[in-house]
Length: 196
Ligand code: ADP
Image (cartoon, rainbow, N blue to C red; front, side, top):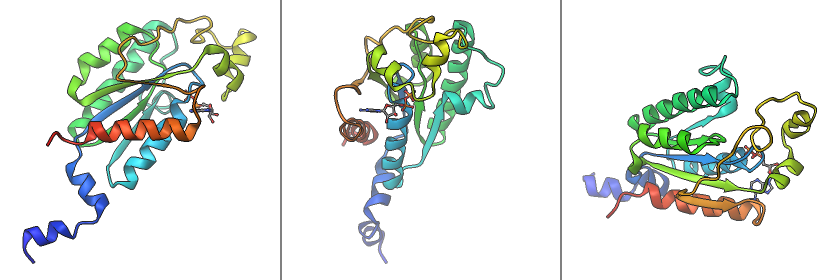
């Protein structure tokens, strides 16, 4: 069989994989903004196209690589530095990385942008008002913070600086999960395709 014939018989998913460029999608936003929900949707959509994905998030890293770090600004920065270095390894291993971290401060986002080649990095800001995130309170953190059980709660006792230069902003309180997910996946696919 000729090479051309072989390529033309590749299933669509494999053809997508052949043409994708490794990239880091860095989802940031308050706790409850929708990072985990939309990261999972994005990872599923990419894998359906046979694109290999590395998922990174705060809970997973804090369970191992970043165990021992707390939530002071300094510890959060170190957590994010390790996450960014891990994402960079993912890109150099030809993976698409979906990273979900609150990433509250501008200087932390700048550190990430200095670590990962900017051409391979997109910041996605999941923008939801604090009141909406508090009402969702998926992990019960806001309720616990009210009793003082969670020090350094982002948005309450620890700062969150909304990103000014995100590559994509999705207002998760204004659109359904399906619509937000469609927008994220569509954006990701444009970033993953090499320029023709
Ligand atoms: P985070 O990872 O940012 O802390 P989660 O994804 O764990 O947030 O929780 C977000 C919650 O908000 C989920 O319960 C999800 O079902 C809900 N939600 C409602 N609307 C949306 C939306 N448009 N996008 C994402 N999540 C949404």
